Image (tube, rainbow, N blue to C red; front, side, top):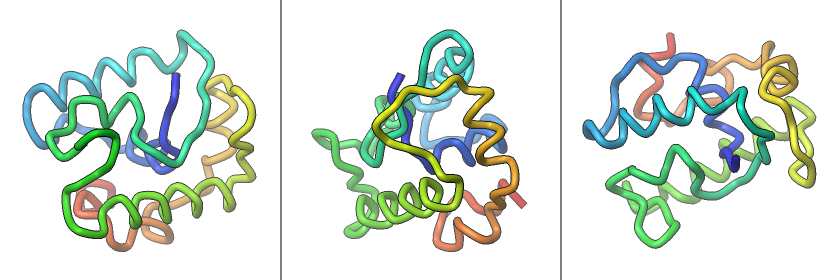
Length: 117
């Protein structure tokens, strides 16, 4: 499974809110798959983005700079957690690596931040 690095933080706080019912259902499906297969951390659209209405040909088009900001969030999580993008992880391993990362220190520009506080 391919997963954007910053989605590791989103998953911890997901509460059923989203852009539309298809996106929400897909998010739950992704969460339910976390322990079933190895995870590759990436800095581009992933399994959660698959049903996002703003995913246009593999690029986040929510706002003009959404893709750039998402990549910056991914890189921040990767660097702060010491995640390697060239390997596969078990979800439990990624949970351990990110357990001390807090959204208040990383997700300042995220439109969903209020759901994580």
